[in-house]
Length: 248
Image (cartoon, rainbow, N blue to C red; front, top):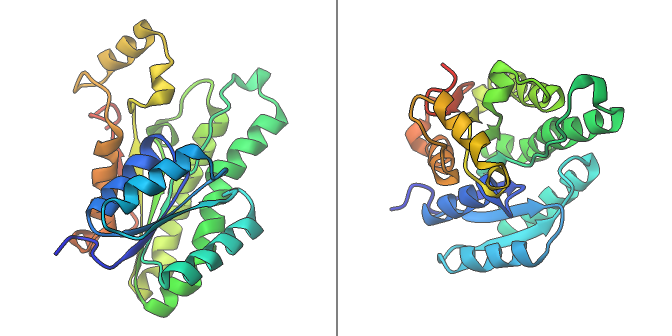
């Protein structure tokens, strides 16, 4: 039997990068996948097709994770389509990097809304269902920048640090109902976004990492799979850094 056989997982911001890898990894472990992104475009459709080929039920939804009402609506639709929700992966996120002196209020608000408020929105939306089931696993995607900070990313760092505080608090609130809440904090992960960086910048990062390389989205997804499964049945309120020892 597969680790997540018969379970339903929601993955937000799943069309690309880490989110896409998480959706595919959970599906390979037997989970039915409901995934969201801001738009249901050709990229989302291709992911939906790829997931369905893994012999699980999969469906994509257009949803703004930073909008409270939108999150409630999409969770209602997912419940109607899938019947239950066992795993929530809050992955949706954006960056609008700049030094504080140049950062606009709009850039601050946008990053906080998508990265942090989305975690509140989606967790609150699935809470009632998980409480009734007396089971669930919530996994929030933070960042090593939320642990240690980074110049030029005060908005992103604040949002990811906020996720850690939220995770630890909700683990204590919902633990008595057998609902586990954890966070993962990826470091330098090689994605389409990092592929646009100059080669010398990437090599400079690798030199700072004891493992001397970047991580892959699949390596993040494997940790998420562990936390989603019963293998992590006594793991809650934790933050797992996935960073090659860049942050210790």
